[in-house]
Length: 251
Image 1: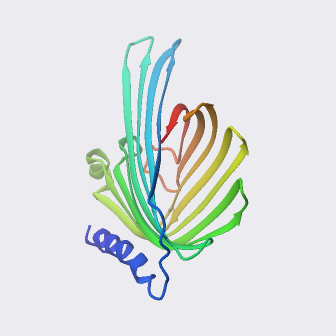
Image 2 (image 1 turned 120 degrees about the vertical axis):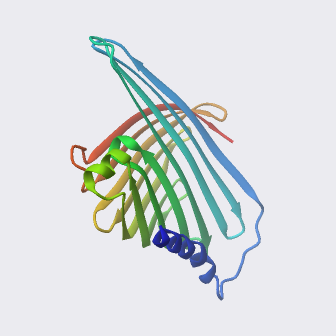
Image 3 (image 1 turned 30 degrees about the vertical axis):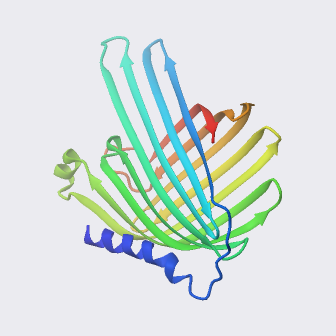
């Protein structure tokens, strides 16, 4: 845990150290966000239901840009033969701060928390800092690339800790992000975000989404999420997927 605290300190200091000699551009305060809520219900040989909630926010002030994310997913599956029920909850919280030198170059620092005991890990913490570059931009489309060093810490569940003989895993990682967004019509937007942390193993997350406006600030969003663990714990799968349809409100 001391290593994690050290990495968090590095991510906090990194953007400030990069400011030496940089000119600050005054700008108006802007704050925007998106709130999502959706659910599914199926019946037949098995009955299942799920609820997905997500809140993302962005705050801009001059050269600074802060991004916040809160997300929760609940699943319940009931076998129609024996009535047995399995439940699973997962949570994610994240923060990233960017300092933009100009329209294309910026430095970043971030921290993320993810909890899903079904993977055998009670929670996963990552922290990283580095350099970002807007590789492509038009009026409707942009492509951002980010790279930098980071740190990964995973706390095993009590059951897995007893089996593995260790309570946690950690490693220094190389952190990379590809973030693409394109407005494909006046009422629809396509997004693709890929995040990878590579150290003792590769952890990756991909989210593909299509958002279509319904009326005013209300929209429908269809998303597909893939989480990949190169070295999953015994008895666990390396890949988890989510397919979500949610209502989105922009503010």
